[in-house]
Image (cartoon, rainbow, N blue to C red; front, side):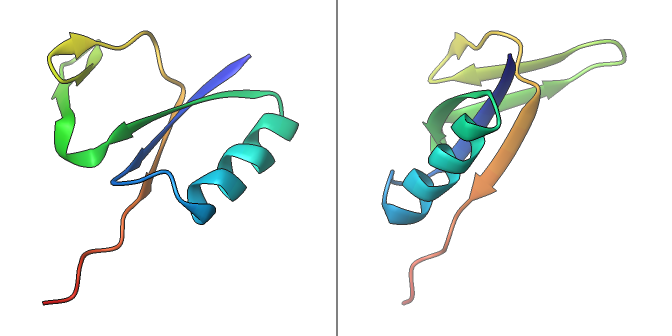
Length: 70
């Protein structure tokens, strides 16, 4: 199964539509708040952490973020 992480600030309608479509394509879908993610890029390894907790191997990352208007 393909593991996909969706980075978002909230799990609204657009997130639900992405998750539904990906699930139909046999993806396991997780989400995390874009503000809580740490990404460490190495030569042979990429480490993803959510609030300091290391995430299991992720195959795809989708960023679903719309900045607030000020």
